[in-house]
Length: 385
Image (cartoon, rainbow, N blue to C red; front, side, top):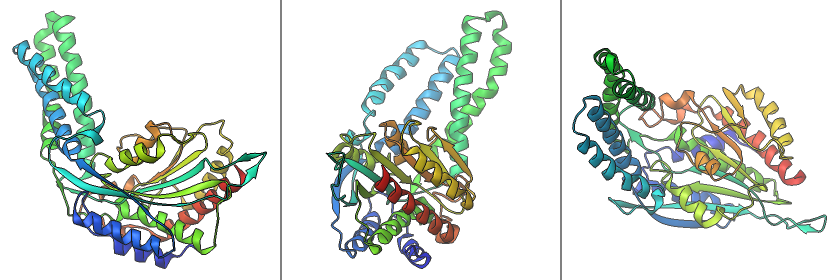
């Protein structure tokens, strides 16, 4: 049975600052591990070491160098300087394609935790179904930042758009409409100014360990724990699918946990027979991203689920769409061609990564109802597909 009281108790217990790579992240990991083992389930741990260079240094370097390059072209400075910046930057672009392999900068320990309810290996049409999997993901760590997520998001979008527009102005001014050099320079000063201001804001934003992380991602953690508790209480043994309950580390530092987990456990899974459910930051409003193939027979089960969740008044439902503007585990799995569902809350972003990310911001009743509908969906997929 899904229990509101248990959800609230677990959320209160897990809501404390737990920056990736710290003892507090390990403390949260130990709490979750203890709760799983009390259900007489075996847990598996995947330890890894990660560098913070990708998420905390490389991004700032990219903002600064790109804006510096724009200024050089805009002010018609020495092209040699621009070439030196490009030559310096290209190796970093290549080197950071796989952030989990970066050895630059300070390195920290983290870990993934998971348990699996294995299926019966039942026989259908003479084929043993041992390779079907449903995976539920949430990340353990939290982080705080000195600028609000809304300001950071707007600054990032402003930086990107103004950078592109400014380069277009420079291209038109220098190569096409050279007779209008002065007026285009004056007009182009506006997007250039926006680019400089947004770059400054992005550079002065720093990570701290002050956010309790109840929304991001305590809510995801308690959802997975509650679904696991419920399935154990009803003694559910999967018929066709292995059901994975995965808790990743260092998501807030370049999605490091899911990268290591993918390389060790996911890369060889059959994409067609694997269902992904990722939970990242749910408070009082619900967003559901449906990422699945139209021809997938399981689409009928998803549509039934969408109908039921209408009672939760979801803020937005996107079917067959990309998850955008995020570096979450769900986006990483989408890029690896996995399909399934993603859950979040766009309204709650005003509290995320701040000291205001506290348990009172989370609607426990919403979490309870979502857990109920998800359990029904999981069982339906397991029994029928």
